[in-house]
Length: 302
Image (cartoon, rainbow, N blue to C red; front, side, top):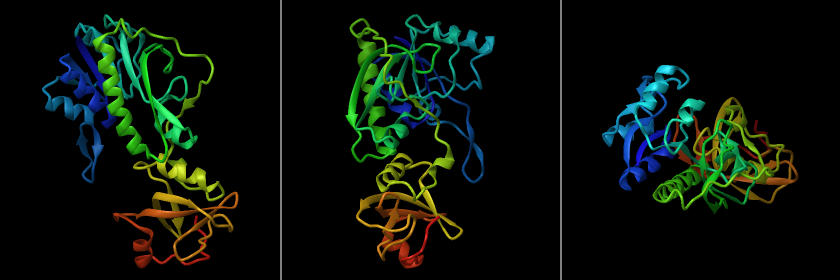
């Protein structure tokens, strides 16, 4: 097929590569514009932009697809289908209806649960047992389209980073299957029950509230790893909590209970950090942190 690919982050790159390896003609790749990155704040292309350029695929980075000129350029590509994976820009109706077979989206949740921007993190935060990928026909509504194919996987103790990589590979496989036999994967409307929305992650959510149950904080740690990183304050310094275990312990929420940095949480629960990171430092174990940055029992963390 003649495909226009539309994606931005690392999640989308395996989908792009799988389509090319399956023999489809990718006539253009759309991605969000390069943005300042690094200490020098030089413009850096998105992961999809970089991957497509390396594959010799023309890359387009419009700020919006709402103006007539951008829509005319899109229509001139004469695509059979547009494949979308975490693109990050709204597709107006003229774009949705231009490809002969419409637009297909790789969505990282079991729709209709977790429609929206951050389905992986929200599923972890909510304590869901399962998540997965849906290949969805796109409509004007937010992730409301019918589903052609889905698969699922247990969340277990996975971090958002690990789950993103797993679901990205799953989405690539499913999209190739759908495009290989589109009539064999008819679109099935989403049920009207069980709809939830995965709001974009606000950085303020990353601060740990020790009043919460330790199990919820442990989910927060996994949901925000590797970014933005759950954190707490010791005096005036932020410390990121990268991995932690729920353990036994009772005390005032936020109070350090012992020399192993066990921290009391709400609901008479406790959390023991396993991997942490100070500002400007690499990741380290609790023992490594405490050797150079003592946090004594009885300290109350912010």
